Length: 241
Ligand code: GLP
Image (cartoon, rainbow, N blue to C red; front, side):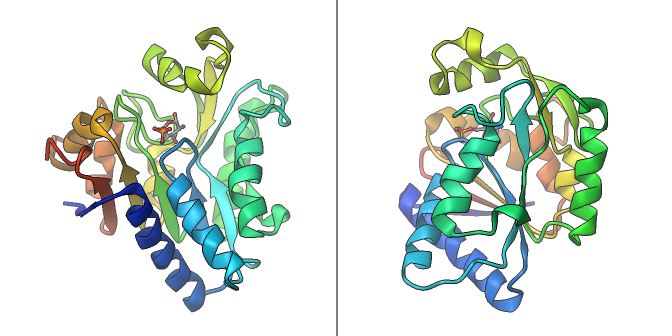
């Protein structure tokens, strides 16, 4: 079972995970961090940015994002290329050339997954993978039904996920229908997993991921297969454990 840490606030979660990343970088400056998007990992990025302002050097850290929307221009403010650039690369002063996001442009999409897998392998794999969780139990954009062995590929987003993410767009109709996401198999290859979740709306998915049966219907339950998975939650997200 995954190790579960219940924290008092998002800020405390951010500080805790930032400290783990700082230790990782102290041991190996060019560690590979798996990057999640959405609101959940923001306290981690903010805590790291504070440390960078105080002198922490992350310039050798490398990164791989979990996923990207298919069909959004790279420069669209809600593309994960833009989000990772604005929330991670710039504030943490990372080398932009060392931070990768799956290629969601239509041209070459059939081979984009394979190219991304090759790039992760060439980097020596992900040392620490940050994860959020969708209300339907997705991680990355691995929606219910995703194979535990899946690798980076195109997935159709569920209505629920598009509704959840509509807050980042003008309307749900503007939320892309497809994504390219690391698979559950890709995620399980990371050396360490840290899944964060905050708020009561995540409580069901967290309980099912940590204590429920291993099932493709709840993709995050795949973390139970990982030998080093940590779940960092606030009281609300832990309320159904
Ligand atoms: C998105 C992302 C996931 C993220 C999830 C939760 O769909 N693709 O990587 O974990 O939603 O988002 P949030 O953290 O904003 O609740």
